[in-house]
Image 1: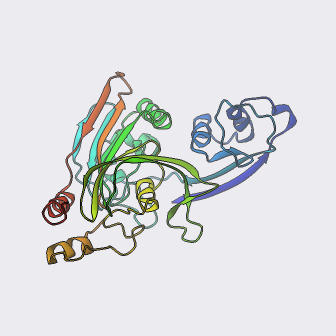
Image 2: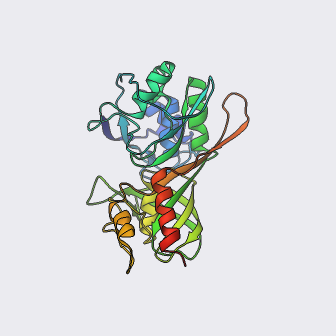
Image 3: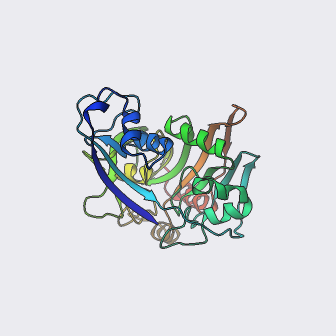
Amino acid sequence: MLEHITERREIPAELYGKRFDHVAASLFPEYSRARLQTWIKDGDLTLDGEAKKPKDKVVVARYVVLDVQLEAEADHEAEDIPLEVVYEDKHLLVVNKPKGLVVHPAAGNPSGTLLNAVLHHAPECAALPRGGIVHRLDKDTTGLMVIAKTLTAHADLVEQLHDRTVGREYEAVAMGTMTGGGKVDTQIGRHPKHRQRMAVIKTGGKQAITHYRLLKRYGNHSHIRVKLETGRTHQIRVHMAHLKHPLVGDQTYAGRQKVPAGASEEMLEMLRNFPRQALHAKALELIHPETGEEMNWEIDLPEDMKQLIELLDREDSV
């Protein structure tokens, strides 16, 4: 269950000139310093609504403002749900998440999630924040996820994510014909009217940076490789829709699926009924929290995306 917290606390005169993270710790003593640091880096804890770095000095702001979705702590049951384990040691667990598997329990999915599966596979994760899960994939996005198995590994991975040293690359099939790769650098926040969706907004969002390159251009579609520099909710899906190249099968951001003129019945069936966004977390790179070794994994595309690409190769090549 997510709780939305919005709170503003006035900065007293004696705290001026101190570091932002020290001021935050004084004004929000009910939260750990680590959590406050995370919120500052994520832009959830700001000075008068303006994002700053933890070490920045407080000189002119009047308020520290907290605006965050806080996941309430809860006990979750271990469930015997199969996991495709790609790598495991005493510190880390890397899995290939299938489509349809929700990562965290919530009101609509209280059980049957990746977290429930992790708690069964590695019971020690029950002692860690969010069961050791440090990043998310959407329910219908497939691919690689890393899970911490110790508190030390959890803290290290969270820090790596904040420092943007975790490499995450995806493959996707987008609608429309791209001419090449590029970079998208925008702010992403809640859609002003449709609160269940995210959107590119001009002010008040969080910086989101996506790099993409073209793997193959088709007559009406594009097979792309995407690298995340940040990790905002629905980031790739929102950015590709912003570029007018939404992902095939994305019912939230693509609108009505366009089908090429003269397409075969097989192609029409595939494009109209592709069951999810065509997005796969293909590669993952990080520094091992214990050994300091650079580690990387890559996983093959799932069968549904393979079939989609094979059909495009046959019928939509240029």
